[in-house]
Image (cartoon, rainbow, N blue to C red; front, side, top):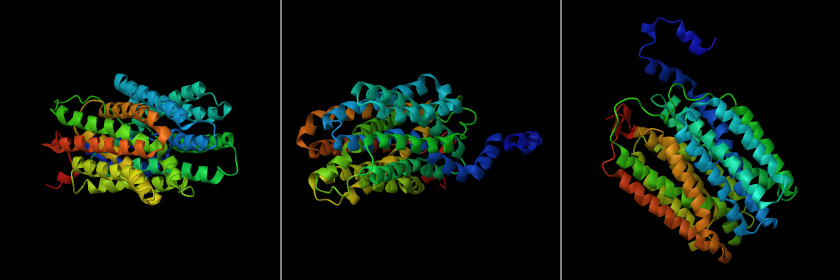
Length: 418
């Protein structure tokens, strides 16, 4: 007998108020949820993400470029295909909010993601790869919106700090895909590498299959209560997160190549493993810090650290790659967690989908900005990326001004005990 059916047999007076009963029930399941969600995010996040398909692609793109299948400029041209699809998926979440609360949507999108990965080794045609990337982007975006809505909805009011471990699944996907490339790049050809990536994504899709959608209204669905005047702060959060998408994707696409170009070839692909290992607890760490400092303050700090990490390989070519990778991995997932939590806190309808769409636009723009500069190496693009992330930090600083720590029944963790 399911727990929901068991509750139905209890007298109504014993299960009121329903929100509190649901929170306690979800709290008892939250450790399991924190394990299931990494499986979802390992194949679904772009920023973000950051779906396994997309993260594998970023590393496989570097791998394919290394093998001579594509030039660096060709890779930069190819990259936006996924981000356009990701934007389309986010817009679907805004225009058709029922999709954000549908487990069926997530499952169909998981299947499409795996198929898009498996289709890559069938051809080296750039147009075909762009189509596959676009389809994969739509699917990964929908999985992200559904999974994020479910997680934030279930953990809100019971154990919000566990959302950090859910986002940490992005790190698990990064580390595993990085290990995959380390294991096969000297023994198997690129087609086998793509097929193994699809097989790994299939395993995670099976693990994530039973995840249910958000109960009741989705976490970012329109709130049918008093409208709160929080638009000013939301749009600062939107601006910061969108600009972060531009800077992040520059590093996400070219970080490994920049490290290899700096003469640290042995580190190369292993940098993604370090990024993933740092990202796995990174989001949880930022979520824990949110119990002491406000989320906008932490977002400024995380963006500054990320900007430093992007600038290091350009300013200090001999900088230890592990430090660069750890700074990047320890911040980018945490920034996503903080931004989406801020959007949910501000109670703007469809906040998750809106923020995701802004991030997607940033990811489309990033590679296009730096593509003309790739002929002279990766130092200038990384410096530009660092400057863009610094601008995102300025927008986050503006978000701090007069930030409403209490919005209706939503209270910032740092103010919960006041």
